[in-house]
Image (cartoon, rainbow, N blue to C red):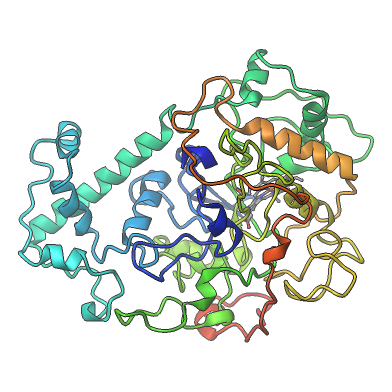
Length: 474
Ligand code: HEC
């Protein structure tokens, strides 16, 4: 929703179950809903042989590659309608079927042609589309609507055009707006406060954040080096290199996905592995593995072990956006509870920066799972649980040596990236829930921590698919 920077709009979900409930009761996804602002700016996924790194694509695991439509964002939007855990349509043709009946059908036809939706659907289509994907009655058939080959091609075309239309919307200035304090500052229409400016310099310097969340400036890598570069203004930065990294998040036992281990009323089991499930991010995608999408390019498959555990570098734009009624994400507030990173483990920007700052510091990094920090230690303050996977762990951050005040300054800078400063976002004030108050940002949400159960070994359906993870994942 706009008021959350187009991220998950329900504070209680952000605090507890992480993934958003799907259309079908008791189904939910497995990761945080990504903000779709600036998603259209990501290029088509490419493997850069010189750097041996992937850049581009959309989604936490880059599975919306743009390979087919040459548009990752359009392909990303094609995911949720047919995701069993999201909107749950059992066949992509359901989208064309529903568009035929939509009030905005004429708009679609104006743009994509008068006959663009001319498809003859069999009489049982409505019933099929009302049954969620994965239902046992379909017997695994991905195209349960029986269309003529011509109609199937047309329906696929509709689905593609529909994705492109959504991409157009997401790139519009109503969504990807470039109207933050930061943008005003670039133009000379806003002067950063002392803390915002200090935070910006730390973001580029001691914090090293812009080595991934690039803003066109240099990075001060060594103590004593002085960064004299200036921000690129020709094409305002979107604060991502479009690459991927493993930031070493721990398993978050709150994630609803771990609990969807039994067949639902349609005979569908989302996660038969329970807590054996491991989220290997891009590695699983390149293997066309469990819970991801098909990798369209077989020359990428051998790279899978080099990206296990990696997730896409999110844009930092709008990460701090909150509704005007509760204008911050940080306790004591009044604040709006968000969730951060792909598995929502982090609950405030203060914690996020503290994580980057201290993840690997001796005496703070513990070999325990979440909910099991030693007595006398406070999780997320002076205890970070073990990483879900250490394969390809990024070591750019983890021991930054930032002071408490410097962490706060980076938070202040991140908050300058919220759109709506120069031109208010439409509908940004429609949040009808309650703001939260009290506590501190450092321990925000800690009251909802639960002990992680013992983790079974990673099942072979995830960690035993060639090319095998290296080193093996326990
Ligand atoms: C090596 C690359 C890298 C560096 C360096 C880096 N990040 Fe990130 N950042 C990432 C990746 C990858 C993600 C997504 C990780 C995930 O969800 O597992 C991310 C996500 C984020 C997000 C978005 C979280 C969300 O939920 O949308 C913010 C904000 C952020 N980083 C801030 C920072 C700050 C501040 C620093 C410096 C202290 C920093 N990053 C340094 C790679 C990096």
